[in-house]
Image (cartoon, rainbow, N blue to C red; front, side, top):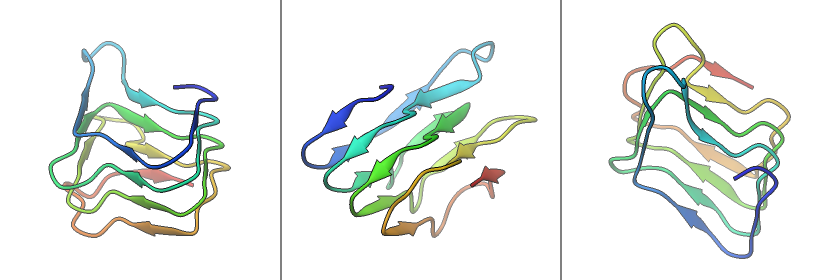
Length: 97
């Protein structure tokens, strides 16, 4: 999803990759006019990479499961958004912002 533009909101339920890849969702440069909802059962096995993402409203990852053994689970380096809701994340992931 590199440099993709979404005119409304983006929702996903599950992103898993083989252990060898380590990146569950790569969305560097993503531009979303609405919010991004990766919550309520969303599971990422590997890094959720949103480097430089521009979210007009919110990133909601409440209740999500983010796992990346030995690495960063959520990478928001240079990302911007109005609000981020990360309540009830399981387990407590390593986050880079």
